Length: 588
Image: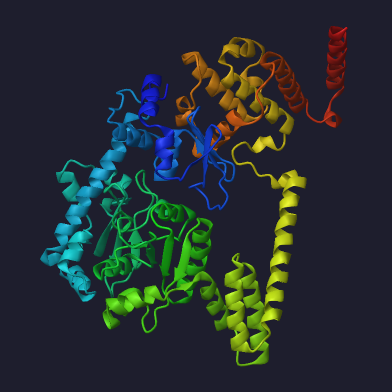
């Protein structure tokens, strides 16, 4: 049993799913249910449905679904037990003593967080010593004040191969634990500190925990410019953002997505406290979703070099998919925000933000840089590329404005440009429509990550899902159903596991509750289970339908196991012939 059933029921009772979800999603009544825009993917038409009766939700757009625990897992980026603790704390409930999660794993995560906290304190204290004069000098040369250094908890890793290890050992932490936190590495001669002779940046999560570190090498010293904590049990690079713990509380209605730690800190010191940065990795969809929970707009302030511009192009696409409005900052006369603010001041930088271009302007400017518009061929090439860019713009008014600008600048007919843009947009639409039709016609397009066998065995999968739904809706039929079919008779692995889970839940309790099995499935799988629960019409005769469904499942199972008749041996043909005779005799 994952958690005591009584505890889960009390947890759900005290954390009403409608109340929880409505704090993140604007819900509207539709019959006995609620609908809203899905918080997990970008959409303009509501496809997110909340089912109060079953305490579940499902998005018909992206397939996300589950119970109140799954929702908190997804929206707050937590694992199962962290979500349970989140809800328990919200309701003022104590966690049960015998929870399913391995107590050793709980202690290990807590231990890592303790080690990280002590390491952050150690690095910060080192920064104030003579041994870290070079690191402190670097930070001061970058213009950081003492209060900023303290606010961000900046520190120094000294020229000692085991300074942190010795400090942690004095506090009762082992080298193995430091290695698990990615603060130590093991070599031929034993353990040593992972960070050596660097300026240290602690990375803090939304709950104030130190979860990782970034280390910058000093100028003139050989080695990688930045060394970052690898993924650990408490840290995933792709799911966190530097300084989000501070920036989420900014009064600004936008985030500034900067290149790295120093840019973010310099922006905060200058009064732009909504700045964040990715963590030593390319910007991810998970990070975009994280940002979308707090702000609806992002201003990109990435480096002007080729790598920075490529990163900007990629980030724009990801942010647009997350439903976030994007603007791009152009920084004239400086390579980054830090340098610009030092040269021209915070007020001038504020002016840059107010005049930031949207993503369409960004792509048009990039296209212009590739072509020599002083020549006829160059102008034609640029305008053709501009047409492709504007064809992707959904707002017709925005298209019209940019077409007018191009028409005036290059002395071409606006009518011709608009015609070309519409033609290209229609062509793109037809291409997308053909792709959608191909997905319907060609089953190979239907990639099902939750139940990969669903496409191969559609008849069996449909019957299995329908039987699972009836079992959930009619627990009184449990004995009848399980006396005629077992999980081993199921064709698809996923449905087999769900059937087992539902049966086990009903053996423990007289009714099924989705929260009872949510510990065993990820959010995507939970979404499928909720879909199964709410799909199809109510059965007019559940018993008779179960009989038919069981026949279908067993027949499909037999067809799967017997394989291709062309590969049968003589004995296989004889066995099949005898089976058919027996079946015929049984039907007389």
